[in-house]
Length: 216
Image (cartoon, rainbow, N blue to C red; front, side, top):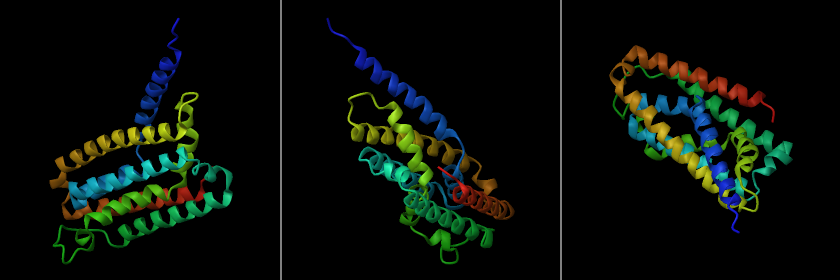
């Protein structure tokens, strides 16, 4: 007699994970704010690079969990706090930059520093914003193992689930970018751009404060 309980377990794990990670992806956060702002101010191509950077960060965290490195954040208070402080400082720097130098118009690349930045700079902005957030690491450490079937490869499943998260994340990023581009004409008005940059700066500073004051 052949039993099929392992396959049922795997299927149940996959369905549960897909539902949970989709809900979490759609929940607004720093990543959403960064993609929306980049799409409106710098165009869909640079927003797409930002989204790729964010999702590479997720993949790195998934690999870290799979190979046991992510557990360091749970075991070491020092490691967690150092990464938390670095992430908070980075978000604060981004937020203050938008508050101090909000864009008021679409100018030429020669006179606008943000437009003169290459695609790699926007990729790294998304990547670092994700990688320097220890809450993402702690989330992956506590979240992913719940959906790994018994006797399965932790490394393989962790990376596969992180990759699945990337697919969902990139799909949602495409929706965000497309919706922003639809209203691009209105969003790029001088007054709207200045307000948008300042509001985004405040959001980034808020995320920095929340990260700095957070506990595991």
